[in-house]
Image (cartoon, rainbow, N blue to C red):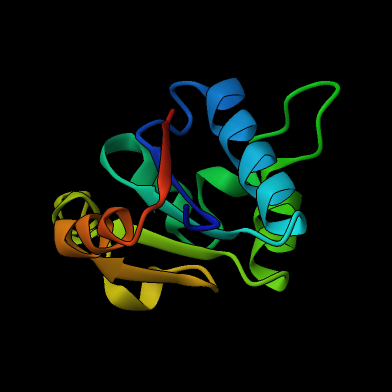
Length: 121
């Protein structure tokens, strides 16, 4: 079994707790030497913008989402955002926060085909 984890995240401001828990799990996994990919789509795409939703979310009793995302990236975590979901909201490539790349379903399918376990939030 591959030591890979795919987390799909479809929420942002609409469910701050779920978005934070997703990145808490992702950060814990990356710190446990797993290869982790967080794929954001739908409302989750709002987390991928510089000075966007991720910078505003702080759930009491948990690290801020901005902190979790920074720790995740600093430790080798990969983040992608659904290109159509991102563009639909009027964002441009230069709006991406550090560590995020535009990608489509093919990247998600490729990661799964390599044996990644999957979680959805």
